[in-house]
Image 1: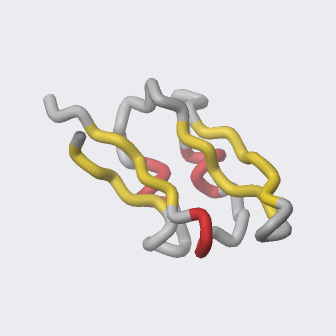
Image 2: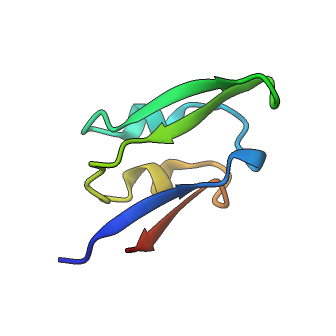
Image 3: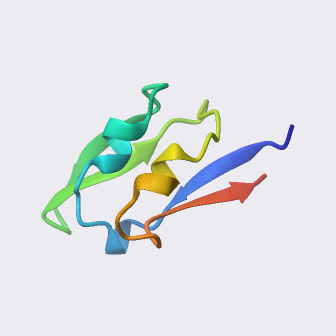
Length: 68
């Protein structure tokens, strides 16, 4: 099994929280960004890498799975 991490591109996230709702492992929390004016996802280091957050992201460039 590959070790996969989730990379967050914070600058284009619109704070919809779909990734948070999709994570069945509770490895995503939303942190308010004062710079952007809305919450952005923060992915835990023990993320399983299932990719469900990437799949549901309405802006496909926000969350990316990356082999580590």
